Length: 402
Ligand SMILES: *[C@@H]1O[C@H](CO)[C@@H](O)[C@H](O)[C@H]1NC(C)=O
Ligand SMILES: *[C@@H]1O[C@H](CO)[C@@H](O)[C@H](O)[C@H]1NC(C)=O
Ligand SMILES: *[C@@H]1O[C@H](CO)[C@@H](O)[C@H](O)[C@H]1NC(C)=O
Image 1 (cartoon, rainbow, N blue to C red):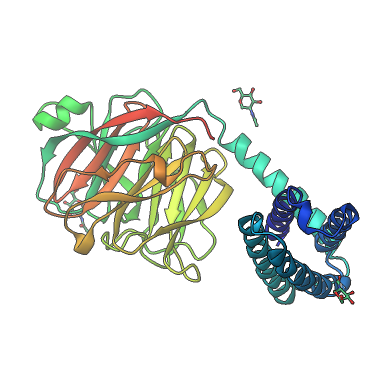
Image 2 (image 1 turned 120 degrees about the vertical axis):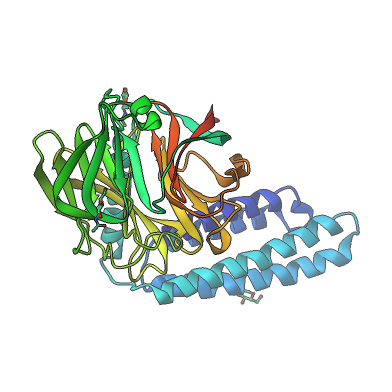
C-alpha cells in the first residue's frame, strides 16, 4: 500500500510538472497555484489511512472532472496547445485510475485507527529486514553466471540417482560419493584421481551413517555432512564425518519437505546448497503454489537466518544451485533436454533477469539428480543418469546497479 502511495505521489509530481508549462489554458496564475495546493493536500491525505481518505478520493475525482471540463474549453481556444492539453487530459484520466486503485487497496486493507503507527512500525521492520539481509549477504562476492563452458564426465556408474561432492569450504581434497536417493552409506575417496581411476588401492573408505538420507540434496560443509533425515518430512541432520556422530539437527519450518522440491527429481524434498555466503536450503511446500522457498541457515547453530519465497517454480525444474547469493534453477521439459536455467532469484535484487544470457547446459539423456556449485573451485558438480559430471563455468562480475 505504501508503495502505491509513493507511486501515486510520484505521479502527482509528474502531473504537476506537465501542467505548469501550459498555464495559458488556466484562467489565471492563481489557478496553477490552486492546483498545486490541491495536489499537496491530496498527497498528504493519501499518506494517512483515516476515514478522511475516502473523502479525499471523492473530492479528487470531482476535481479531476472539473479540470477535464476546463481543458475541454482550452481545446477551443487555440490549436497550438492541443497536443499538450491532450496529454494533460490523458494524465488526468490516469490519475483517476490511480485513485481508483488506491481506493480499492483501502477497501481491501483493514483501515484501522492505529494504522499510522502500524505503518511506521512496518517501515521500521522493513528497513531492519533490509539491513539484516545486507549484513547477512555481505561477502565480497559479485560474480554472476554467464554460461556453461564445458562438461567433463569424471566417472560413470550404473546408479541413476545419487550425489557427489567435495567439502564446499575446507581445503580437503577428499571426494564423497552418496549412491541412490535413500541410503546410509557414504564412500570417501582420498582425492579426485582416486575417484576417477577407481583405484583398488587405496580404495574408498566406507562410512556408515547412523541415519539414512532422503533425496540427493546433501552437502558437506567444514567436515560436516548435512542431509535430509529419511522418514522425517523436514529434519536436517548435521553429521560429523570424523567422529561419525550426529552433531546437531534442525526442523525446517514452513511446511518444508511436504512436496518435492523439483518436479523431475522424484526423491528430493529438501535440497541443500553452499555458496560464498554459506549454507542454504531450497524447498517447496503447501500453500505457496509450487514456488521454491530459499532459506539461509547458520551452519554452526543450525539457526534459520532468513527465508524467501522465490518466483521460481518447482514445475519442470530438475535441480538448482546458488552462486554468490543468487539462486539458479535448472528446468527441462518432460525431464529430458534441453536443460536450461530459466529462473534466477537474487534476494538482494542485484541481478535482474535481463542481465542474464541464455543459460543452457549441454544436452543430456536425462534430468540431473543434483547440481551443486562449489565455491572453492568455482565449478558445478552434477549427477546425471549415473554419470558424475563437472561443469566448468563462465563467470563475470556483476554490473553495478543502475
Ligand atoms: C467542481 O466544479 C463545481 C462547479 O464549477 C464546483 O461547485 C465544485 O466545487 C468543484 N469541485 C472541486 C473539487 O473543485
Ligand atoms: C560489509 O562488509 C564490509 C567489509 O567486509 C563492511 O565494511 C561493511 O560495513 C559491511 N556492511 C554491512 C551492511 O554489514
Ligand atoms: C546402500 O548403498 C550400498 C552401496 O553404496 C548398497 O550396497 C546397498 O544396497 C544400498 N542399500 C539400499 C537399501 O539401497
